[in-house]
Image (cartoon, rainbow, N blue to C red):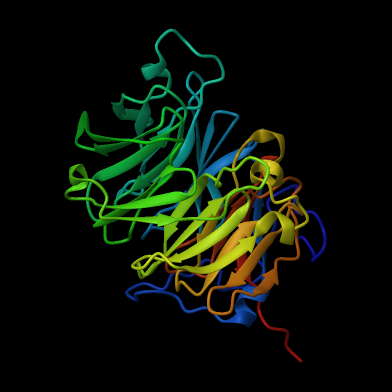
Length: 370
């Protein structure tokens, strides 16, 4: 396995602890402490992608994870054993922004075409893909430019997509027709809360709007300001990642290389972290993600007490939401930048995917004996 301070890579690595991937079933969340967070190390490392990993996702209740990359490949893994289950391809249209539906063998993902055709709507359609028999169950056509964000409702068959055509679209897995459109002033980012009742949409630079998912057509019920104007350009940063905390009380966003945490009710800023500056980068948007243009992702731990992000130093960094201080830098580093990070629901397990195609599954190390 990869020792602390070394680059993680190569063949699948062995488990570090016997309690590999145990899920806390029947409980609301897994409680983490600082020592567990600090001890996280790679239990498995996969080098199945031949290009940057652009997104990954854990299923909310089953022990599976999916990754998609710029190599047009989709890989499905069994997380409790660390085994690659299946590899599928979307060669013609590519794949990005993958998310599980409620079924553990079905995903929705966006296209990522390398050469545009004469039909932009077809180029940028979303696909509902059955992994069980490798069939497309439905296509969702409407966006005319690259989709950059997809969020599935935790309670219904509805999902959201946001694209560079400056629109947010609402969909339902049961029909091809678009349920609604929100016009934006910039490339937006979207996120449902875990109750599926509210969604956040970053519709303009330096702001995020909250909508009632059942009455979005009435407009946002509140708008929050994010960040400060750049002294050179006079512009506020664009939000490229948005996620509600597990309890719905906080909203995490990444904008311009900085993580912001806001109170989801009042909109006041709780914490601000210059990820690029704190992890060896310049802190200017995509610099930490290198030439791939894959914006950095941040995520919550299942208990909402910590946030994770990849860094310009090719490592995963963890901050305390309570104190705002950094509590851990996971010792092993990727060959590239870990631009995709995710913590598994109800498990002591996290994943990071990097711009060089590597994916690590992180678990706490067993305490030393003696």
